[in-house]
Image: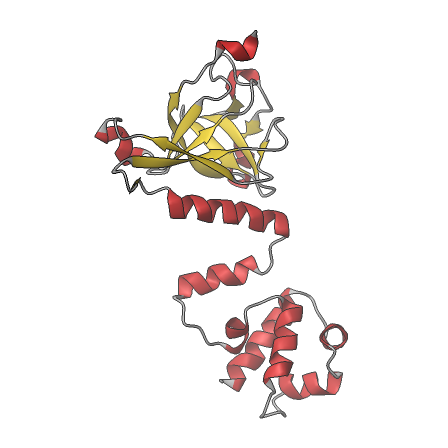
Length: 242
């Protein structure tokens, strides 16, 4: 282990978290003298148990703390950033990871092209809030190849709030192949994990059919675009309205 790199990393993480040695001592159940010896280079033999206690308090990977990793730099940087995020944000990221793992059009054992469809649950007000990640599969074997190539995943609408533009149970096919442009209908996610269906205009992110708030263009960078709606698969059922 590179002790100098470890000391520098430890100092930086303490500064980033605004954590004093005294606070670290209490939370890690280590003596402050021990920590001072580590920080100021007096200790040349640091126990693994001590490093683990420090890493647990700092909420960072052990390899990151000691400057050793088997992963590419980009992966390590992402993992480090994850350590500072709240549980709500981690749920959102897990959702994105699931989509990334499943959105390539894969052949099933029956030779069908299957597209993963995300089904929102929970709060269905202005932001579609995903308390659970539910999925179903859509057979797109008969879809035109041009549509298959640009479709990454689908989202099933579980609300009537977007009528008559979109109806409950409609499936929106989403593409992530290029950045949103003006007049595109886009799925956005905020830092709380809420998804918003909006049309991108010069004035801002406009709600569909007047449902929801307009998001000013100045706040657009507070929302991450998950993808662009390229087609709606209509599944209108009149029985739902009798």
